Every structure is written in structure tokens, then in C-alpha cells.
Amino acid sequence: MIQTSSIISRAKQEGRKTLLEPEAKTVCAEYGIPVTKFKVAVSEDEAASFASEIGYPIVLKIVSPDVIHKSDAGGVMVNLKSPAEVSAAYQKILENVKKYKPDAQIAGILVQEMAPQSTEVIVGAIKDPQFGPTVMFGLGGIFVEILKDVSFRIAPLTADDAMDMITELKAYPLLKGYRNTPPADIDALVEILCSTSRLVMDNPEIKELDLNPVLAYEKGAKAVDARIILE
Ligand code: ADP
Ligand code: MG
Image (cartoon, rainbow, N blue to C red):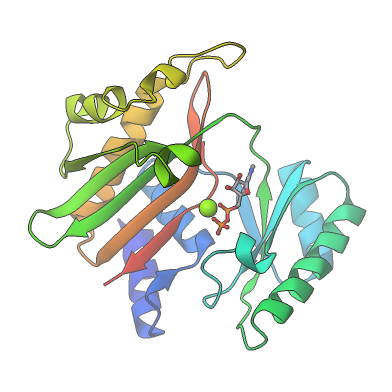
């Protein structure tokens, strides 16, 4: 895959082990994983003009090789509804990040589509020292962090493997819908797991991949954050 190879080789040349979110999302998109629409702005005016192109509401995020956990740095602002809010958030993010890490190199501000709220799932991949690329699936928030309710399969995955990874979670009934939460599109999640498997099988330079969160809808699913770490 042409964009993926050039992104990975550029990162290597620059001595970076982490792909920036826009780079990671370009890689994901090339493998057919749905991601939020985005553009990288380098000025407040550019951010506002990208925002109107993409459509409100908007999310702004820091793009920096020195900031891996963007919210920890005050580097994520969601639900921006006007050019004035975008401009204010642009300044605020730069200010927050400068306070958090004064010497952080800043590549720009990511302007992206705000995905509607829904059930959050996590798709990941790691390289097991014995078994090689391994894909992970779980539900967002407490399910992964506290309950450790996750499933793993060694790549490459078949669609049946992916389906098993989803249905074996204790939290699976939540994905089938409950109270006023509609059922999630399981087929869309199966596709994302299989695409993730292809992505890591094709690119042995990838040490870790993290789509956290992926928003699961009644129809479709979309990664709103993507992190890729190289060997
Ligand atoms: P990080 O994990 O690096 O702190 P994220 O990109 O995951 O940053 O953003 C933090 C949170 O903000 C996400 O978990 C998600 O709840 C929300 N968020 C981020 N991007 C979007 C988006 N495009 N649409 C909707 N919500 C988003
Ligand atoms: Mg995240």
C-alpha cells in the first residue's frame, strides 16, 4: 500500500517511533478502516476554513510527535460549533500543550469531524514475541481498563475469528443493544478487525496499533483516534 509505505519510511527517516494521528488514520483508511474526516491546520484561519469544509460540530487535536496521550496534555477539544469556538480552541490547545511540555514540537492542529456519540469499542494489535501480530478487541472505558474484558486472536484473522472475538466478550450483550442503546453493527466491527489484521500482517514494522475509541453505530463504525507505534 503506497501511502502506508511512504508514511512509515518517512517516520523512520525522521527517527520517529510513533505515527502522528493523521498519519495513522491515513494508514487505516488505506486498509479500509473507516476514520473521521480530517485535515491538519497550521494557522487559526486555516483551522476555521477546514472546519467549514468538514462541517460543524468539529473536534480539534494537537499533532505532535512529543504528545502521545493528547487529552492528558489538554490537546483535545470536542463539540466546537462555530468559527469563533474553533479559533478559541486552537489557541487554548497550543497554550495547554506548551504548559504540559514546553519543548514539544508542534506539527499542527488536527481539524476533524465530530463523530456522534455511541458505544465505544477498542481495536488493537500488538506483536507477541512468540506468536507475532495479534489483534485485540474490547469495549471502551471500564470494560478494558478495570474489568480486562478483552479478546485476542493471532493474525491473520478470518471473519469467523473476528466474530468469535466479539461474541466471547462478557460485555457482548451490550453490543446487541440494551435499554435506549441501539444494537451495534457487528458486521462493521468484524470488517474493522479483519482490516486491522491485514494491516499488521502487511507491515511487520508495526509494533503496536491502537484504535481507541472506535464508535460503533447501528449502521457502520468509525475510528476517532488512531495510534501506531513502530519497532
Ligand atoms: P487521546 O486518546 O490521545 O487522549 P483521543 O483522540 O482519543 O485522544 O480523544 C479523546 C476523546 O475525545 C476520545 O476518547 C473520544 O471520546 C473523544 N473524541 C476524540 N475525537 C473525536 C471525534 N472526532 N468525534 C467524537 N469524539 C471524539
Ligand atoms: Mg484515544
